[in-house]
Length: 368
Image (tube, rainbow, N blue to C red; front, side, top):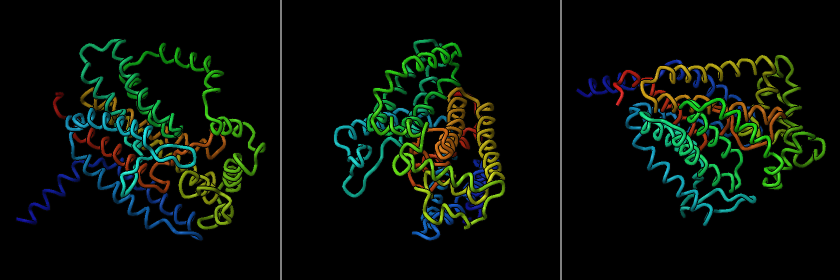
């Protein structure tokens, strides 16, 4: 009897997994573990801790994958409201570290509520569009923009530009997949470009320095420009085929800052070169492409826009991280998905992955 139960449990578990997604992510996880091992080889090795982080994320992914999209919808409103309330509490009572108020103390630990909104915001906006699917009009798109603006503004004020970009883009992707007109998008781009001089004065000093350093890293080679200079040296020194695993000089002489987290791409590039980068890009393109296929086959508006948003969020993570490490974007705190060392951000990525698998495995359910 116990054996029959275990067999049914395993069969049900496998039924909710999407094999292409799983294989792609396993490849990225494996590459990430080897790269973290190399990055921390001569320091405090973080590989064991990352294995634990991946295990926790993987278990959460399995749990979410078993939930139907209809059940996921039930979490949208309470999760979003709780996240926004926590962001307000952070603004009022949060812990300030290095000039940023991003954490809330619970006594025995502290949490970063903005991470919750990476999932809660697109989930809430997708729920909102599903609720009004029968009669979508301009008023509903304005309402969705307000739902996005609230957490975006609260996170940007902390300030946490990296997380604000991720939350903002995830919410925007939902609105885009729900049918936002290209005329509106072009209008927003023109308006944003026109407002750039005013927005410049609204940025914090450290944010303006990051942009100026991006344009000319040599203006502050030992300060704000140090990260970009060292990471681009590492990428360039990798050449076509790289220096080999554990052979990166920029890495092991500790020139690359945050080499196991935000700048892990520089470590990988130095050791594996252009060839390795090409393989990595193909894996991310496959991950995004598989996610968009799942979105296209989804059975409800909620599932379709949510899957599309999660898929393009993977793109945003990878593009922003690789862009900042390569010196084409300002330095912001965005990890490389499924490769960078971390806990909370990794859990968020696995939750998104679980939602994609849920949408794929329940795609044949009757629309409710």
